[in-house]
Image (cartoon, rainbow, N blue to C red; front, side):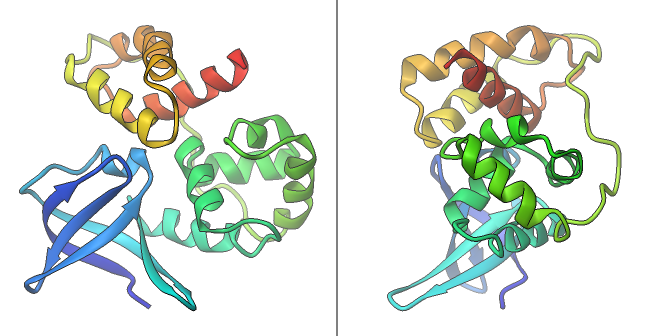
Length: 204
């Protein structure tokens, strides 16, 4: 088990990062909201989970240990593999998932690409006693103050394209969350990404 990797970030793509650890470049597959917090050349600590298959060893990365543990718990549900679990954490924070499961909120789960109404109901049943209770306040989509800097738009657009959205769809999603970003003191790409994904799900 590789619990985390720590070192300078030497490469970034829409779906992964390479972190130099002791002279070795570790390829870590991350959701866009995790990648949004990384910068080339800067030191980073990424919580990780190693997924072992007969023909591959894949390292998945997360912003913190809570995300990693939730990623592993999600995969205990039937039909949930690493990619679906990672997509769920791209749309919802761990606490938001706990709240959704506790409330039986199937609509929240269908906001995740690839999860339909029937699959959401099944997940609510299977995850009910596995994720635990929320550990903190679930961030509300809401205002702060002042305007965020323009670079968040490019980061969010790249994150959405990395999740499989067409460039035009990604552009529409960025436009949809612009008012929310402008209300923030500092644009938080991970929060905006979740809002953008929810807005695109409602539009479909």
